[in-house]
Amino acid sequence: MDHHLKLIAPKHLSCKFLRMDAEKAPFFIHKLCIKTLPTLIVFREGKNVERLTGFEGLIIDPSEPDKWHTGRLEQWLASTGAIQYKVPTEEIKEEMRRMGIRPKGTLWSGTSRSGFQSNV
Image 1 (cartoon, rainbow, N blue to C red):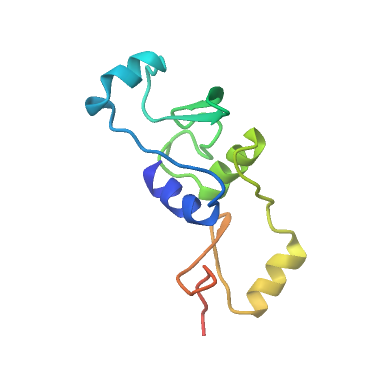
Image 2: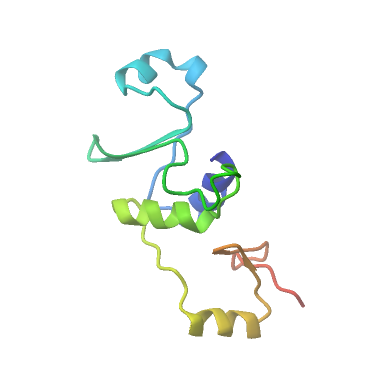
């Protein structure tokens, strides 16, 4: 989960992301009724509005629960209203390929200034 959130957070500066170590924050774990790790909680105006427990709904293959695409988490966060994200259309994907930008699963990313990695 940390890996995926580290990819998402820099692209969505209007949303605040906070990581808490459960062992070092027992008060918050109890207060938020967290029973399973990882747990992702979306707050709006100080109120808990949505919760993702474990990798519920993100897993593609149940035999490999740790393998899922960052784009699936982005879609979930967008569905809660925490971020704005739209899956690239085929037309946009083709244009990005022509520009030398490559996909990583359902996430288009890389290391250049624009946030994309070029194949050039």
